[in-house]
Amino acid sequence: MSDTPAPPQPSHRLRIDTAALAANWRALDALSGGASAGAAIKAECYGLGIDACLPALRDAGARQFYVAHWSEVAAALRHVGPDQIAVLHGPMNSADVDYACATGVVPVINSLDQARRWSDGGGGVCHLMIDTGINRLGVAADQLSNSAISALDVNILMSHLASADEDSPMNVRQLTAFRECLTAVPHRLASLANSAGIGLGADYAFDCTRPGLALYGGVPRGDMAGTIQQVAHIEAAIIQTRRLNPGDAVGYNGEFTATKPMRVGTVSLGYADGFLRARGPGALVNCGDHKLPLLGKVSMDMVVADLSDAPTVGEGNWVQVPFNLPDAARQSTVSQYELLTVMGGRLRG
Ligand SMILES: *Cc1c(COP(=O)(O)O)cnc(C)c1O
Image (cartoon, rainbow, N blue to C red; front, side, top):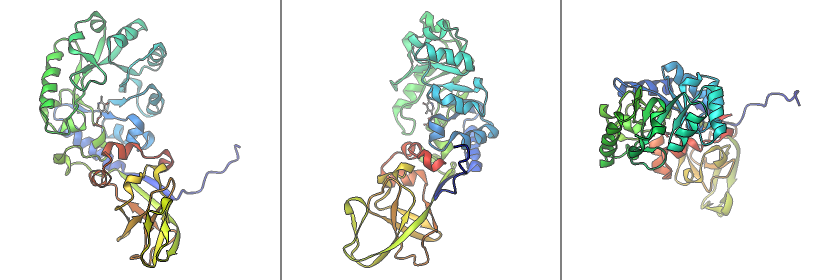
């Protein structure tokens, strides 16, 4: 077993443009004004990979990193210190508390129960999430006077915006509610804005911001489009070509049928890599200057492209998958967040 040789090069790849990632962090940090930007790194840096992304974010200057699960801590600890890692789901049982104490990673407290559990287990510095209207996790404003909250040593007092990607009256309602909470709980830093919230302006920045999507090339608000660069680049090889006669159908359920003789190529990329079926029909892949329409259903490991207008393209050539996130979201009706986070581990390599 230990003699297994390293595998040969795969026939598809995800390339992370770490310079673009660092530039996005710097741009979001600058847009945060006097506040400093952290980085949401949950879900493997939104599908792009912790090891590929976290060092670039750290080296660009990010100091505070957010994961959702305790299971995500170990990977982050390879690159940053425990006091820089916040676990958004908080301690759900005493094992979580023990793990936080053993590693020195900082929990986000989301309820009176979590506050008591943290203090009873030894406690120490924590962050506190206040719910100002998203109604997911967080302590309600009228619970802040509870003794379980007063007992906490709160570093970052935070809340999360529900509709920052829209010009919704909800944004000001949450901003006002958050401001009213600031005096109720002693804390060192305050934080409200995610990526879209940074785009809402200086009022929303407080001491630190928590971008995620926009770091990785997502554009949550149109006004940020010129600022954010594409980070993820997907390429895959054509692994077989064939000729179709009129009447020949392509892929599962034969959803595409040739009406004329044509040449097609099978591309080594499928929904197991995060290239969802919704990305198939009507979409194109590029091979150099050639634009190749996709035909039929996307399979788990393959998708078929039309090579009729690209006679020089064949087996062994690589295609580039357009991955401008706003465009891909419009084409597929899948959200930019989902397009990133469904990226398959097989593609990350
Ligand atoms: C995921 C998350 C973020 C990052 O949000 P984006 O919209 O991706 O910028 C920030 N804060 C909290 C609490 C989160 O759960």
